[in-house]
Length: 214
Image (cartoon, rainbow, N blue to C red; front, side):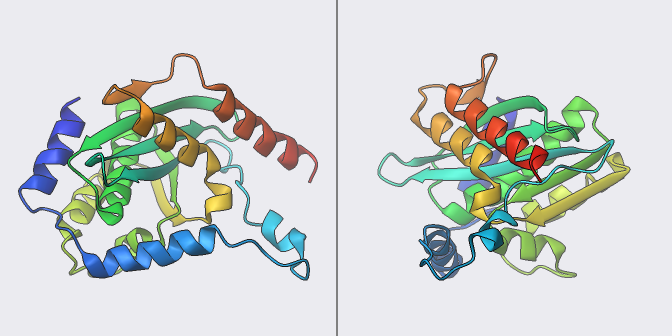
């Protein structure tokens, strides 16, 4: 709960401001994610961007955000899996007062790092389908208004033997997207799925089945 409260306070007190320019970039990314290819597109190319197993001994946490501008809130979804594709946990966090997609996606990455630290995982790959956030994270110097959050994330690196933060296409992030939508619709601010939703299980099982057939 304190993480959600902290995130809301940081947004409210201008640690991360609303950024129209970055929001437009995110809108373009969402449009690309919804693009329906023509029959001429090789479907094998789309298969290559699906979810991949982390390396042996590593965990992977996928994060995504969903925004309800009219409702004045957003939510982030987190899904953690091991190197066999096994579902370790899934959770969601509502961000009341945060309606900027850029802010929500950035806070989602930080939440994923904090989750890994809480679980004591030292080799972790974090994936987000927000290219803007990932590009700013890997940049040598970030001067955006999200830089305090990015600096906060990087300050945790000392707690890990390995921490990779990567961009993936929406097709490889469906499980986290499902969690984010589920969390946004929930009346609770924090959701830890003791019983995984059937929709999430179906996505995870589909990923595992596809990997076994490769």
